[in-house]
Image (cartoon, rainbow, N blue to C red; front, top):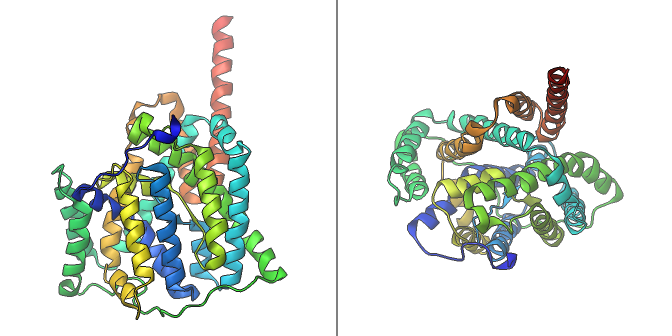
Length: 381
C-alpha cells in the first residue's frame, strides 16, 4: 500500500549530514525574515520544527520544509506586519488544501509536459546557484575553502560532508575574518500576530498569497514529486502532488496563526538533503527536533548558535545542492527536440519566476508540437 512506502528511520552520520544539507536555503531566509520583519524567533523556529517532524513521520523520506520564497522576498524588502503575514499563510494554506483535496494538483501534474517540468527544475537550480554566489561573495576565501572541502569529502561515500562543512565554516570564520552570520543582531522578543484587519487581509491576498501560489504549485508540489521519484523510485510513490499540496496546506492553516511563517516543501531542498546523504525519514526528523529544541532555549542562545554559521559557508552548501538540481540524468537523456522548450522554460524561470517559466515553456512546447505535425504532414504527401 502507498502508506507503507518510504525508507523508515535509520540512524547514521550520513543521515545527520543530510539533515544539514538544506541549511543553505533554510537559514538565510528564516534568519533574514526574523531579523528584518520583527517576527518571534521562538514561533518561527517552532513552526519549522513541527512541520519538519510531521513531514518526516508522514513521508519517511527526506522531504524538506522551506520558507515560501515569494513571501520571504517581500518580507525582506518591505514592511509587512505579523498579522498580514499570518493572513497570507491562512489563505495560501486553504488554497493548497483545496487543490489537494479536490485532486486538482494531480491533474495539473498530468497536464504539464515533462520537458517543461525539467526546464522548471533547471531554472530553479540556476536561481539557487545565483543566490549561493551572492552568499559566498561576502567571504570568498572562506566560501572557496568550504566548497573545496565539500567536493573533496563527497568523494568519500561514507563521509558526512555537510556536517564537516558546517563545522569547518564555524571554526574558520573568525580566523579568516568572515562577517557575522545572518541575523546575528536580531531580538529574541516574542510578538505573536493579532487578528488581521480587513486592509491587512486584502494586502495578504494581493501581495503575498497570489504571487506565492504559482511558486508553490510548481516548486513545492510538481517539482518536489518529480525529484522524489528521481531519487527514490517506487519508494517515493506516495510523494504525490496531491499529498504535498495537502501537507503544505494543513501546515500553513494550523501554524501561521501562531507566528510561524508560510512554509512549503521544495525540490531544491529535497535534492540538497539527498546530495548530502539523507535517505530516510531520519534526516527531517532530526532537523525538526533540533529546530523545536532551539525554539524553547531561553536567552537568545538559539539565535546565537544559528547566527554562528557564516553566510559564505551556507552559500557553498547551496551551490552544491543547486548543481544536483541542474545536472540530472534526465537532462542529458532528454530528446534534442525538447531542448528549446527546456531552455525557454529555464531562462524565463531565472529571469522572472517559475509561473512565467511555465507559461513560456508551454508556448515553446506548442510551437514544437505544431512543427512536428507540419513535418509529418509533409512527409505523408
